[in-house]
Amino acid sequence: MIDFIKFVNSDTVRNHLQQIRYQPTALEAAWLTWQCETISIEEKYTAWQEIIETLPDCPTGSLTMGLKAKYRDSTHTFLQAYIAQQEELVSTFYQTNEPAVYYAKYQILPKGERFWREYRSIERSFPSLETCLQAVPKDEGKLFHITIYKENLNGDFLTAARFLPDHRLAFVDARPGSMCAVNMGKDKWVLYTGVLYFPGTTSISIQKNFPLPFHSGDFLYNPNMPEGRFCGGIFVTAETELHDTYGFFLRDDKPDTIVPLVPNLLDCEYYPVDALPESYRILPLLINFLKIKYDAWYYWSNYTDSID
Image (cartoon, rainbow, N blue to C red; front, side, top):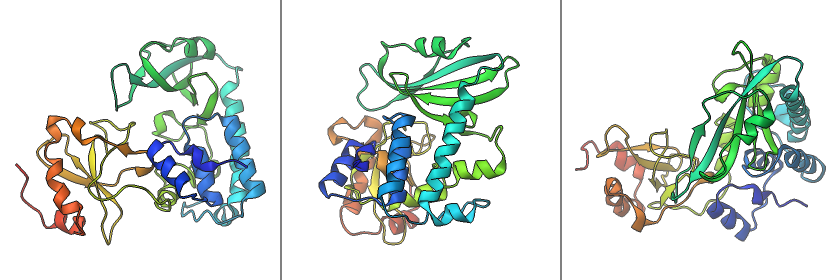
């Protein structure tokens, strides 16, 4: 039987869940499979099929308008339809019945960089998928994935797909850069985004169920979220009595002030305190508040002076 916890992207979170022998529900296992950044679409099909055959069924609990009731009530039924949809999207991506060009964007951990991954693009088109994949540099750092955008000769977006470093297909995206729906009917679109898609409400709810090793006052970072992105950069965790776990981040436009946001903790790792950049010297000032049982949200809500 597949150990679905191995699909967790964060080494810290994965090790913790394996140590406590956490057993995910069918819905949690389906989501872990979907979000895993190291397995191919064929491996995902296999994992989802095993969920259908071996794990007890449960509701998806989706609140997405337009999603059929049978997909709300049964994770197994949803997965069967989702697999069929993915197979259809894969077939569409590989179709060559009209001329097309391909563009590549890739994510790497640059040479010499310890923490932050970055996205880079090749500023030209290619006449085939193979030549586009082969054009991705292999000497810039550790490669994590490649996203290929397919357009017709008029420059109209057709579809996109993500590939692993060894060029195995990871999944197909029905929209460019996850910005707008293209070429998909409403009934299919709600199936595509209504349960597993992040940051949908169901996906966010699924993540809240996992017991995590992090506590108030921990310095964390998400390798995929460097400074300059929403919920990007180093942050301090804050557990509260009435709210979700927050992260206190530096504001990009005001580096001497902090802002509470809700990070994706399942992808996070510990950030070593001795490696904190000078610009983050403000964060240790929060530790005395967060290491004791003080409601950090109350503290933030009642704190109006900026910290110098």
